[in-house]
Structures are given as structure tokens and as C-alpha cells.
Image (cartoon, rainbow, N blue to C red; front, side, top):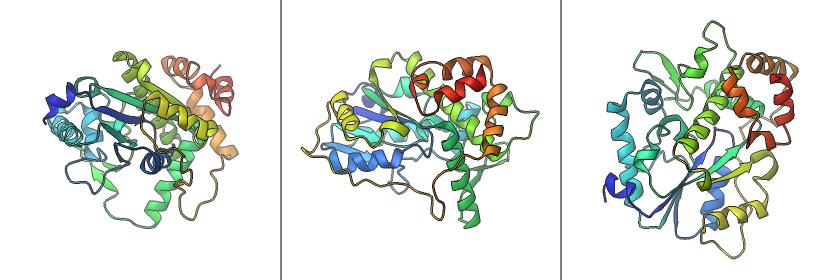
Length: 291
């Protein structure tokens, strides 16, 4: 089966719309332990033929270098099409970093699980995870963009449109990850709206509902997924080693306020609208800063 067959296929293909540190591994483990007749994966690092989409594909997508990017996306589509299971699920935050511009053309019977976590906690958690990785001196965590700049394998490049509004300022790494979260959410909303996929998205407020068994049951009903009669809720929590709970400090709050006060109006409008306005644990705080 080739890429064209996938674009016309009835195979249900589900991706997460999410930033990193937003529950993607927890959700992948839920699918692994509870969903039947489904090929499931998180970030397929060691799966031959299924690109992770981290690293250079992120840069290629940012630069619109489709000559380099499209063969990678087509290889992923071929992998999906060749799975025997009627459902494919990938809980990978690289999707919106590398696949968003071409999903409408390459995917047909698609569904999305939109995971939204408190942006300050996402930014702080991503920053702490990067700090830990660099302290451990792990290899192959950076790559060179086509412009020769060094970038962190799992992050945006900082050359995306939103970052250009802050190009004359030196951003902290926390502020970088906060802007990355906003850019990712903007891509999620554009993807859904431009392809008229609003009825294919199941939204989860991560802080309030990700670990709620009743909400996960609603998710399985939404996509009509076959599942075990009783859910196994002993699921993996992807905690950063040697780091305790994510704590937002006064300095973090000041840096977030600085970013949000200077945010272009279309992004402010997005964050004041659904589904973000309904996130009770943080939406009102964000809205007050932007008003």
C-alpha cells in the first residue's frame, strides 16, 4: 500500500495535537494497555520505516523545504498504511512541529486528541528536561539546521513566525518554550480550521482531566475504539529524573507576563477563545495578563 492509498484509506489514523511535557506518554501507555485492534506508538525512535519527525524535519517544515520534508512524511504514511490493524495511534509531539502543513493532503480518515496543559508548566518542564539532558551530556541531542545553526533535537528552531516578533530581544529558555507552546497551539487551531476537522478532535484539559477514567472512556466512545472491559489505569508518568514537581516561581511569572503583554493580537484572541478559555486552572490568569 502506498501513500496515495493512505490518503484514500478508511484506516482511522489518530495523532495527538500537543506540546511536549503534556501527557503524550501517559496517553500512549493508556492505548497500549487498554485499546484493542490498534497499532500504537509514542515517539518511534527504534521502529524501522517510521520516522520520528524530530530534528531536521522540524527545520525543513519551518523553512518550507518540502523537497527534503515530503519524502520523510511519505515514508511515515507508507508505514501507517502497511499496518494491519484498522486503527493507528501516534502520541508524538513532533506531529505539529513537522507534519502540520501537509496533513490535509496526506491523511484522510484522521482523528486528533488535543492535549492542553498549563503553558507555564509546559515551558518550565521542557526547560528543566533540557537542562537535565545537557547536564548528563547525552549525545546526539542537537543537530545543525540548513543555515548551520545548532538546535535542540526536540524543539522548534526559534525561526518560526511567532518568534520573529521577539527577534530584537534576548529570551530566556523558559520564554522560548512558552512561545513554542503558543506556536504549537496556533498550528493546532489552523490545522483543524483549515481542513474543517472540528468534529474529529477530542479535547482534554490535561491538568483537570487527563487521568480521569470517565474522560478516557468518553475518548474511546468518541472514536468508537475497541477496548478492554475494564481499564488498566496503572499508567506511566513521565517524570524528569532528579526533579520534583514543576514549580512556577515569581521570576517565571514575570517572564511570562513580559511575553504575553507583547503577544500579537491574533494569538491573544486565540488564547481567549475555546478551548483555552475553558481551562479553569490557568485561563483566567492568562487572560488578565493579556487584557
